[in-house]
Image (tube, rainbow over all chains, first blue to last red; front, side, top):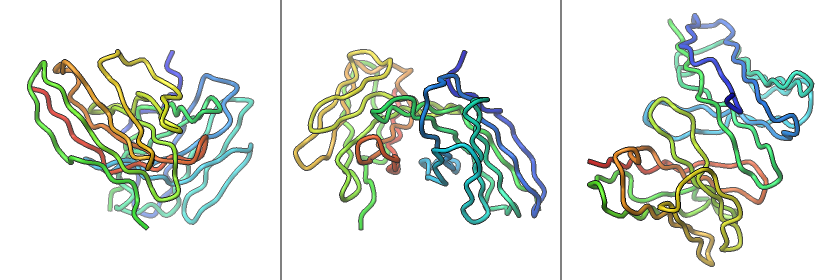
Length: 111
Length: 111
């Protein structure tokens, strides 16, 4: 079983709609969670982090964490063509910063 | 304020050769983590350096080694290159246990 799992996609989203991405993790002791965006051929860039159960909003992005169910999600509101990228979920399972990444979900926003 | 920098951008080597990749962390950061990202996969943790010591290591063979210098910059060395070592090598800088910020990466091709 992979430690961090994401649907690979592609997730096709009409422009202006909401994109919903999910991520599950296996280590119940995980404490911090991150979403990164990666454009083709580029390196990952941080979108947001979340540490506590519930929702965290940053602009058009909302991260949701449910530690009891071991999942974290990312919502992208008012999706734009520039949001077309692969979204990586990362989990920090220990106190030393060894991030475990999912394989990523490809999002395609269609005009 | 300079972000994370990596050099070189691209590198082509042949099987059996050795390679050294370099990383300078973001100003104020003292921890450097290295990841390998194969095509279509999420980044895989190689190791992390803090206070000039390897603090954690992922499931990579001893052919992968590293170093951190007093100015917090770091090197990743790979000996006896295999075709399967072809990947994007990512350096991430952070404070210990904190959010990691990625450099632009080094694309290594092994022929």
